[in-house]
Amino acid sequence: MTQKLKESGTSENKMGVMPVGRLLVQMSLPMMISMLVQALYNIVDSIFVAQISEKALTAVSLAFPIQSLIIAVSTGTGVGINALLSKRLGQKDFQGVNKSAGNGVFLFIISFIVFIILGIIVPRPYFQSQTNDPEIVEYGVQYMTVILTVSPGCFMAILFERLLQSTGLTVLSMVSQLTGAIFNIIFDPILIFGYLGFPAMGITGAAVATVLGQIAAAIISIILNIKKNKEISFSLRYIKPDKRVIADIYKVGVPSILLASIGSVMTYFLNLILGSFSMTAVTIFGVYFKLQSFIFMPIFGMNNGLVPIIAYNFGAQKKKRIIDTIFVGIKISVGIMIIGTLVFELFPAQLLSLFNASDEMIAQGCPALRIIGIHFPIAAVCICLFSVFQALGQGVYSMIGSFVRQLIVLLPAAWLLSLTGSLTNVWWAFPIAEVSSLLTAFFFMKKAHAKYIKNMPD
Image 1 (cartoon, one colour):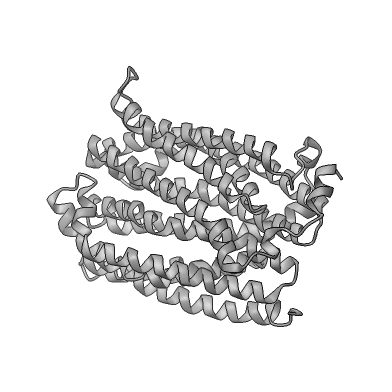
Image 2 (cartoon, rainbow, N blue to C red):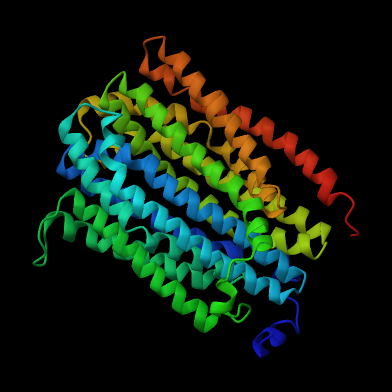
């Protein structure tokens, strides 16, 4: 064990002693801010793409499930690493901390190699399966090829940001995320429209700006870990794969990956349902995802702080701190989501106008945003409880809940409502599905409390 690890074990990590409310805000606020900037980037990116044409915006909307799959694999694996590493910190198992980090690096290298191969094979048949419009297909192939074949930056940025988060260095994680997001926002117009002597690359420029931002974030997060993360010893010997550690990571990580991947499957098939009405409907759905990310991203940022706190105190067997963290997290999340609902209800036309929306898109999109926005506060509770399951090492509960919501309820409900011939009716599938998700979350929370929390000593 290195000297710095010995030194790090002489005092309790703040996740075990700081008052819960202040701790959650301190750990989550930097990530919430950085996630807001990332969400702003997503919106700005689409605003710039919309200036090319509505078909270009449609292509980016159709590419969303594959982009979500990259995020699903990287963040899902990251959640597994985060939960295991924080638990080992709580147990004062510093050798386990290092093995968790090292095996995480190994898993991410394997993951991005797979996506590079997919980037060579998948884009054209993927877009041709969703539209016969050759212009949309070409836009989509150009965009997705870059996103997939230059995905290492995304994977490494997320991995090393998670390592910072899992040891409580959330401010440094924010620095990395902000670097990537701001880099994207600056280079989007430059590369899309050809400013400052750069060639005008169109939709390819949007993709290049995205991956360059990811690479910048990865470089910053790696440097910050090496220089500032004193609770992890970075050494090549820890990258050697360990079956037991990998199994522990994927015990939480695989359900988390599947949980997020279910969203990709749902989006793909919902695009097909919406495409039976018009490609404008598909574009509205894509715009909705960009807009809702500005509401949901702060919640996900808060939960990135919530998971290591609960995992640490689960390892340390501190019952009251676990329960307090859950309730504080839910209160904050619901408050944010109520604001989001009000924005969607009161200003749908203004939101759509940001994306150079046609009169037809505004007419179809306003009722869509108002109906979907109803479910935001319910979603806040579900997201928090699903994060609790991940922190307790029971990510399978989250996976089942998401499976119920998106595949068992949302898609069938959307398909059945589409048979009415009314596009407006289809959007009601979202509130219906969220209620089912809430009931599932409550059921599993009762089980998790009885099994893992109720009988803790304090």
